[in-house]
Length: 70
Image 1 (tube, rainbow, N blue to C red):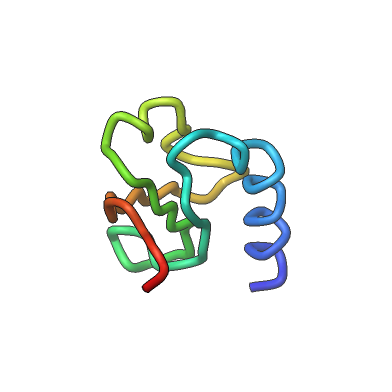
Image 2 (spheres, rainbow, N blue to C red; image 1 turned 135 degrees about the vertical axis):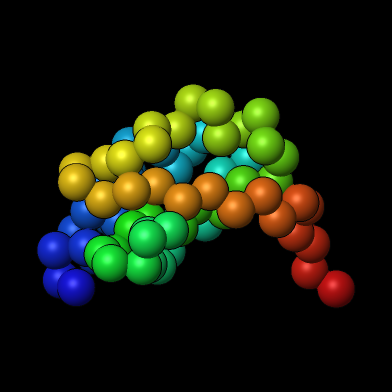
């Protein structure tokens, strides 16, 4: 888990300034047999510049729309 946190931090440093990227977390990969990076974006096309995997972890993209404080 510590290694996954380091990979998450490196991913945020490399891609965190991309438009539409709202957050990065750690989740299970689609096969549910290893950890993955969970990336939240506001629109699907904003994920096109993201890799399918990063430093050995799958990148799982969730399109969540706009996020606003109430």
